[in-house]
Image (cartoon, rainbow, N blue to C red):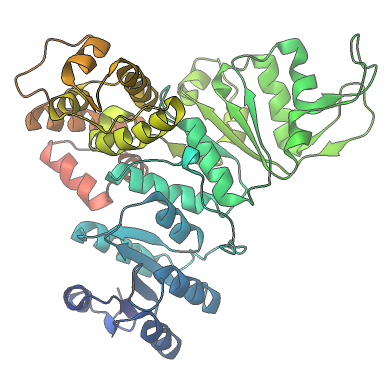
Length: 451
């Protein structure tokens, strides 16, 4: 880092400003401080810093408003948002409006150092044009991603970044992990609420009807075609087409999808006019497409077209600390749908849910809670009810995994991820939801080195 570079810190907490000033000055940086949003904006215009570290909750104005002013004034200035609050919407909003990173309090020094280093060294990392105006409605509750763990914060930031572009996205994750939900959130964070979201379920597509379903058909194109039918691409207009479980497409259907992705042009079955689609394409799969390519079961060129931007959805068993939040969220929805008044699960039931392996992920948790609500007479779900549903009466005394057990789970997950990414530290850290320095420390503590 060069000593001539300036960093502006905007935070109303004196202790945070002093700590950040000390940290940044030790890095040889010139530090400018501001305790409010308007003061911070004034100092930004006067000093034109390379980096702004900005609190999202300020006493006079929202940090998001200051972020917008900074980005409008200078697209090259990097902004790191910091906050003590944990929610999906503000994370997505911050990243979508041009924030370089989003860090939660209490601030992790390794994470901050990694973010600052990136900001001041990636001189060619400019912010794309066309940021959203901020007038779009909030994400509806039924399309809300719940979680506060580091892995989920990383996911929120990624969604925010992807919501600023229209490139094709590939979502990878196990069955029940919420891939379709993430696709909806990306869509609703990218476009006005009126833009269509069209789903193509690749597991149920009949090969002979694929072109008719996707591209539409003209009247009389085949027996039974009594009128013109618009295909999914045409119905999507400028919105989103979501290919759910794209790994289930047969080879012939993969070829047809590839031809469309290469040109973005198509013709209705029986038609003569070429149509063009501007819809955003999002594909999801619970399979490892790269392995399917190696096995000759998936086209390499199609994977190349789909994998422009990628999101990996962590399974529930690797973010167990999100379970209380998920329980609260699902109980509210279940009570509304079923007309019940279940207030909570008791402590022993919570410990039991925390220790379950969750092969079915978030979907399984939701189904367990629905069953528990229908079997509960009072306002509290008890452990015996959860035990009968999970079929798990053999529990350890505490009802939860011991810390050492959780450490072993994390170690296995880290090893699996680092091997899957072929020791790409940046990609593995993104999937794991941790900073690169933290990941390197973990690998070192495990005695792991790249061969």
